[in-house]
Length: 223
Image (cartoon, rainbow, N blue to C red; front, side, top):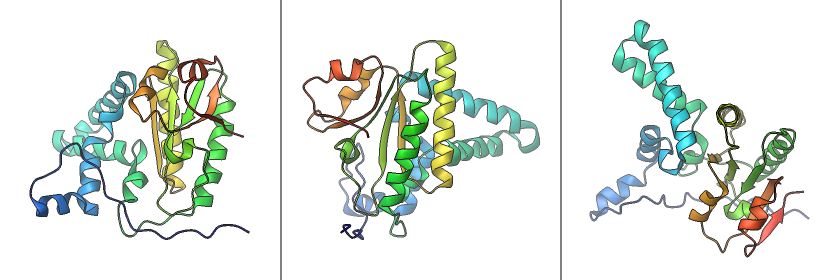
């Protein structure tokens, strides 16, 4: 017998700074403000240098392409909005809005599709899920997300390929209404910044670097 889907309220969004005034703290938890902040920052604080460089380069190219027909400021706004929609985390932020509900079965199916796709890429060596997904648990509530982390291979061509892969996966998640929290790190060491008492769901570990670095951590193999 399947467990019923839990209908939940939005959880509080954690920010680096907690305002001292109650009205400002409440405003920071509103859906428009959360979406607006993410539109501005677009997850850049969580990016390693390789991914951040690609993001800035892509936005610069888009801005230059739109500069003549739109003008400097409208072109910048359009380029930034495109990055937010197609290469951002719109649905991850939408989980903090009252209107958001998404079937956990849809997330599980999407993750299985993504895992199959990643395993077909012989050049990609490491991919893991963190958080509740890392424990191998099936999501049972309608505000869950998929915290997927790739490790970018070294070299300029691999840098381009992994960032184009991020773009494709995020666009795919956008169209399928999937809250995909996705980053590509420069090395497995970047996973050290997260809680070490949580399990890692290992999708790819072709060279065994994940198993070696996190030998004392619970590793769950994705089946």
